[in-house]
Length: 366
Length: 247
Image (cartoon, rainbow over all chains, first blue to last red; front, side, top):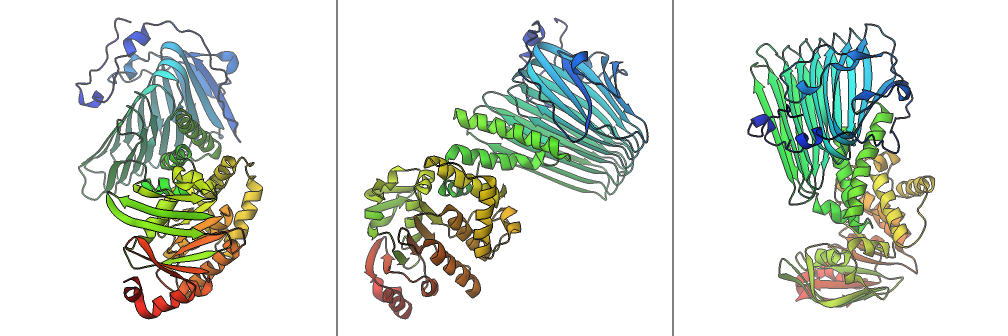
């Protein structure tokens, strides 16, 4: 993998990322070591299941249903990590009036080396889908997903990164059509470093996009989310709600940008980037950006970074809750803001449990 | 039950308590009254174990154990309850979740079994009902959007559920209208007026003491107890003011 060319953090978009471990991971061979169990969700409406190990489908553990495997339409080339994904991946294309699929579940396991995979999601007029992607193992997991939502289509995409070590880089290119809705919720709750690059175009009248999540980091971990939502047509709504928690010497960074084009009147944009420092040596970067070329828009943005409220900690202690548990309870409530937006209860509960497991792990260590 | 001996405490090196002595036995209700700045709330926080309040001299024992050596959560598990003058809002954590976590943490610390979800719900419903709080409010985030009176009522619901041996109630009567004062006062009597329990009521006013009749009244001024007496002392204070008595 001597051809691996990576962006330098002298570039503004990459200044908070540390990609230095990637060449070494890319040179490794996969171990094939599988996790003890695969966290498929038991849900009310089961749908297709896909298991990828080191970027390859494990057919006998998968039930692809309506998901097609094979060559994915040529991905866009300009994305620094996304362009590495190659052409063999998965495609979900739902026609207008397609019967509900049930929850689509995709599990990605990396076993120590680098793996790359493209995906394509295309929902035709009024089609709906809900997808959960879970990332496990260790290594470098690199994904590029291109999404097109036609008029009135709705996609709920929820991702949990539980990868124990290594790196997870996820790039998304999303076009949201008239009255369509795109909701992406990400939980970084493993031990790996992460990088999220998202570019969402609200390309039709009254499109809706919500992109947010919770980034949990400890040790020397780094999470880095870079998002742009472009309002190109009037009456669009967008929400970016991110909650970052950093302990030890960890760093969480969120750069979230809203662009409103000249004709995109009545745009309603909201950004809420909040960070919680669990130790004085941790770092949180929050960079909300607005670029507005229309004159009749409503855009609210807020960024705060703080520590756990001492009054609240004493209040919990005075009722008998030990310091580690009090800290976990308050941190969980901080994080829940971003996760409670997931619509399906089964998925939401699983993500909240994952976040609590991360917090409990910290409590046991401290 | 509680024995305070020559207690000195500072906040940011500023002396607030300057040699306070007090002894509270099971079955007794003590009222601590005194002017602003006398150290009443400091006494509550020092006994509750709040960080930032430094004990520089003296000793406090609770059921024979060194109270000052225990963390705030350990004091609660040992049976001490601190009712806050300004109860804290905790967005994102429901009252029910908060109280169940607290109750079970105390039970674990005492080596008891955790209470089941069903038993806990029955207990919290009974306590909420007795204080005129709806289960809807119990499911809301702790104190968020509650009025001053509702927050104090919520403190009493918590006290009822946690069932402490000793309650230190810091101006539980402030911010209450007459009806709410009656509800809260009756709550204190119902939950705490028992032979094996005791109460330290910190208050400015006589009003609450008409409902919760103290066995002893102490006047705290400039960090020390300057006078002690029976319930009649509160009336005397109300009539003559702190100036005459604390001088």
